[in-house]
Length: 90
Image 1 (cartoon, rainbow, N blue to C red):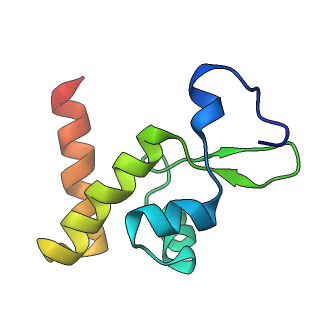
Image 2: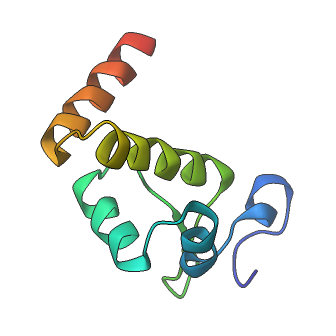
């Protein structure tokens, strides 16, 4: 797994292409969502800058996919919904 520490959770981190195959979301869309949902979708990075999606990142992608594609939220609406949900659960 490159430069990510090979213990526990980091060991299960996968590349963006593998994350794309797991979630059914295109690589370019994952990159876009990282920018649009900064603070919500933050995959780890290796020292070389490669993205590594952890299990919690994969779950976030599934949630974003459901909100944006199934429930027809706009990007801004999904962002507000997630921020509100995060505040309420804190």
